[in-house]
Length: 186
Image: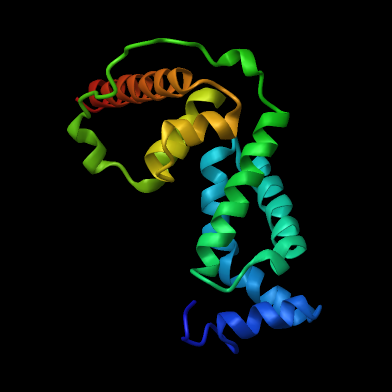
């Protein structure tokens, strides 16, 4: 828990005021974290409208479950966990589970072209968003959020080998997209 003042309140005070139903504190909490949470949702969404829906659902859950935040550890980390779970549930409602496919014993490494150093984060995000839903979910959870394949499998209701294969396919597809960018630039 950060002892530093966020705007008008410390995290602890802000949470307490939100739990008491203080609307201005709820607004302050939203304003403090909505940008970072939107960036998280955007990585899981197919477009900005879907990301906005995820963000809204996520903050509804955060406010409904704020009493479950123990005050131990970072509030932002706790909120990220709630937001990730919300984004995954949202996507599971809108994803065809048959888009996942199994490939056993596929290596998990691939070479990354150097053009990635020249891309902006917006361009990289756009490439990730162009991935098929299953690939994008696994890629985000593994590469960006740091989940293990077992955790991903549990979250998405798929096998660990499916998680691994989706990651390999996502990386391969991203590699192909980057190589196409190199060809277009050259």
